[in-house]
Amino acid sequence: MNDCCNRLVGREGYDVAVVGAGSAGFSAAITAVELGAKVALIGHGTIGGTCVNVGCVPSKTLIRAAEAVHGGKASARFPGLGGSVSLDNWTALATSKDDLVTELRQKKYVDLLPAYESVTYIEGKARFADRKLLVGDAPMKAGKVILAMGARAAVPTIPGLDSVPYLTSTSALALERLPKSLLVIGGGVIGVELGQMFARLGVSVTICCRSRLLPEMDTEVGAALQSYLEAEGVRVCSGIDYQRIDSTANGIELTCESLSCDAVAAVKTIAAEQVLIATGRRPNSNGMGLEDHGIALGRSGGIVVDEYLETSVPGIYAAGDVTGRDQFVYMAAYGAKLAARNAVEGNQRRYDNSTMPSVVFTDPQVASVGLTEMAARAQGHEVKVSLLPLDAVPRALAARDARGLIKLVADKASDRLLGGQIMAPEGADSIQTLVLAIKHGMTAADLGATIFPYLTTVEGLKLAAQTFDKDVAKLSCCAG
Image (tube, rainbow, N blue to C red; front, side, top):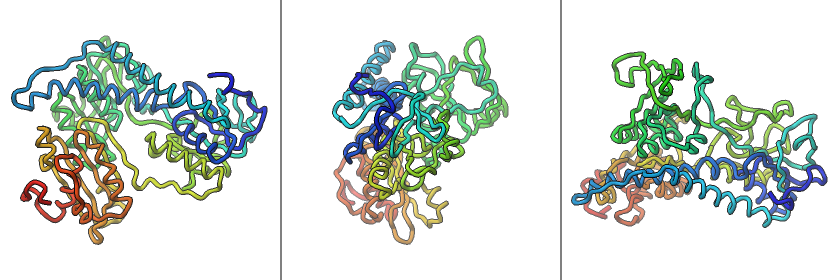
């Protein structure tokens, strides 16, 4: 970092000190500066945080590359087409990923700092001690503090794991060579995304999980995704009770108890060359003296905040993954912006995640917003549900790819849309339409009566809305 962006700690006071130089930290700093505040942005380690360095950017570019490999093989679904695409050089592909990461880190983080003269970037480890915020051993004078330290890979408690070399999402994306076989522990977003990616690049993959794939989604979605992964050769073992994991001469071996692997034995072993731990992320809230300073933490280590993103200590706010909720980069940026405004202008803006979209970048993609059927019923809603298979959407038929479904949940009495899930190739690009529909209180009838362009995936939302009351299979093209 240039010296012009790295002044001495404690030499002067700041209106706001932001701890963490990732997406949330930068969002908070920029917002506070735009409101006239003088800001100290405190970073420790590589600038840019998780998303650009080890998360969204490197994973999604490799996932897209794996889709290209699969697409070449899958082209045979069109009569008269043939051919294939293969991974010829993992090193070249990985290097291109690293180049993209470096470019975006420079453009979207490092190069931004000189544009904000009221932001002072300070490299150092922050902590609380003696009722003060310290950077290194020097006190930081700041009127308000925003904590945005992000999160790291969570590691489950499995006997033997502490003596087994394992991969996390970070190290898996930095492999110098691909293993022949890979055991993925965890069936959430990271597990299914990376599991399918590595399988498409030629790795023999087994995914194991304690419950089921994508447990935050309704059961139809996880079951459908499992069938599609298995069709590509991925082995899925759900309902697993991990007994222990050990190193072997050829890699690792997991002993598990379940009937769901092959319904033959209650206890069995799964062997692989390497193991990837993909069981979520844990907030980076340790080692800072937060609790000693009076800042409350939740059971998972997330910093507890109120609706204004203020912690249990007045004047100290927290945003992003370190809160342990809504761990998406866009929610980190959104929350940090609110935290900064509340810190500078007073607590006026409430955090609202009621129409937060989420996307799983498998193929088919899985996107959701609002309440699942399970969550809606748990909240006491009397609901009605529409479930549309993708083969009812003309776009899927024209593309010769009908993998997926669309599910809508509405309040039975008012017809108001409560939530929905879209599973389709490129389905993620359609979820924002449902976000806006729910945000603005549309009913299922409203959505079903809206004009949509023909031969698009998003048209499936219209058809799914009409499915509440009619059989769309009996409609002619565009007749709805």
